[in-house]
Structures are given as C-alpha cells and as structure tokens.
Image (cartoon, rainbow, N blue to C red):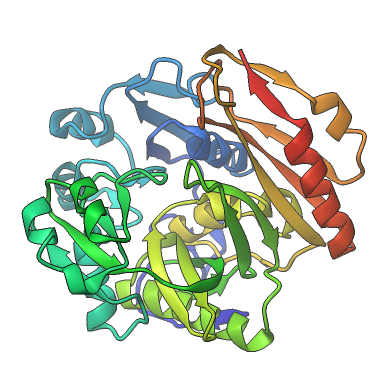
Length: 396
C-alpha cells in the first residue's frame, strides 16, 4: 500500500528538478549497535560517508564506518562536538541527548527523525497522550507518579506498569495482575496500561520522506519470548484478514503523518480477540520487526530509511516471498566469548540466511544476530522456524 502526501519542502541533498544527488555529505549516526551496522551496510550502496558515535569501544559498527567516535550519545557536549562538522544526523537508538540535537538543528544541521519526534517517543507517558489527542486507538491507561500513586488504581487491574522513560527491549515493564503485584511497580513516573486480551501482536514499518511521500511495509506478526519479553520470531506478511491489514496500515500512516516525521517508524500493535487493533508502542528508527526486509522485500527498511532522510523517492516494499525472522539470543547460563552452535545445520536448509551482529561477547538474552527464512509455503516456513529455534545456540 502506497500513500503520498506532498509538502512544499525542499530536501537538501536531492533535487527532483535536476535529478542531482549529493552523496559527498558527512552523515552521522548516534549509536553503533546492530541497527547502525545494518544501516551502514545499506549506506555502502549509496557511497555515503558515515560517522558513528557510541560509548562502547567494541560496538558492532566499530570497524565498519569511516569514522568511529567513542563517546556518550546522552552527553550534550559530546553530541555537539560529534555533530558540528556533519551535514546530516540520524539515530539507531532513542536514548540520545535531545537538547544537543535541537541546538545542532538551529545551527543548520539536518536531523532526522526530528528532535521533537524523538523527544515525544522517549517518554511513554507523552506518547500515550499523543495517541489519545489524535484519536489513535490504544489500550486504556492512567498516568502514575510513583509506586504509591500506582497502588491507588486497584480497580484498573489487571494491567502493566511501564516506566515513562528509560525502558528498552522489554525492560521497564512490569505485569501488575493483582494487588499483590503492586510492589513490583516502579518508583518513578510511568503509566498503568490496561492488559489487552490479544489474538496477535503485529507491527507495521512505515517511512516518510521530506516531500511527504509515505510507504508502508507489509504487516508482520510477532511471537515474543515469554521470559525475556523480546521478539522470538516473526512471520511476514501477517496471517490476518485483509481488512485488519488495511486498518493497521492506515494507523501507521496516520501516526507518521501526524508527527510529520521524516525517516522510518515502527508501529507495534495488538490485534485483540474482539477484532480491534490497538497501538502499543512506536520506535522512530529501524526495528527488530523489519529485519526480514533485508532479504524478503524489494527495498529493505534500512535502504528505505536512507531514502527517506536523504529526500530520495521511497522504494518498493513488496515482498519476494513469505518470510520469517528468528532472533539469535545469548543462551541462558552462558556468558563470555560467543560460540555459535548449529549454523552449519540450518544453512543446509533452502532459503535460510544468517546475519550476525559482530558482538564478541555473549550473555543471556543478548541479541547476537538474526536468521531470515524465505519460503513459498507457510507450513514449510513454520517448520523451518521450529528447526532453527531448536538448532541454533549461542554459548561461551
């Protein structure tokens, strides 16, 4: 599904009238993790000059970019110093210094996604109020100040308590199913969200460029690890009705258009047992629920992000085949230098592709890579997912 809205905005690096594209610009990414690594892999095709800022000297991007800067993307002065000589700055993680990005924007730097969008998404409390204000369907919620305040909402259970700021990859969320669970609530501002009785968890990756052109990727369905609260695997496209796919796409387009965001946005949603679609959370960057697009779609989410922030026309998001993505997580009980078991066996299967993140050290639940599986048949695809999950281990 392609959506186009046109604004009178002239991108800096691409001129539609002359078809000239300036790829000699200096581009910075705040964050050097696996998402940054895959952004670099896509940037190579555009011959972009990439700078990375990350606090980890062994970050996955360390040896892939032209310029790696060791430092905190949360520190104002570090971000200013990093960005002062760059033309365009983007992110692979939301936890960045917003004030520094706003200052760099004032100095004429292109910042995508825009600082005010990142700022809104950094705080789940503000995020949920944005949904309510813009009539975007989401689970009922109440804002909470601290644990004591949270305990006053006994009639709101069962629910989940979410930290306003700082939660990531399943952290910062506590199930508050009964009054006895209130002691697990956070001692900081957050929100209590009504538990949703859902049929499936789904996601839509949507992109928007400076011209206002918008495109969505096919809806995917996600299965979460019950222990780590991370995506275990996903199936693309989601096995849901065409009506529900259309509703999910419409919601994603409405969100990115309401934000007037430039870049790529992941919109995670619930399909309830009553057939309603509710927004859970959004992320203004490439996302775990779009990894399969590297092999499965004509344009990957990473290429699409570059197209969006460089003012280029957005690419075709149609899939080649049915696909799945299985996360490779560090196994429980192992911590140290990573050893991968079972890769030779899964590579014997047709349509199996391995993507490792360059992390030398493993620990339980750490994202070490992912596996993309392509197939023409859903049953065969699901069988391969099961085989991969049972076969691949990361030990130390």
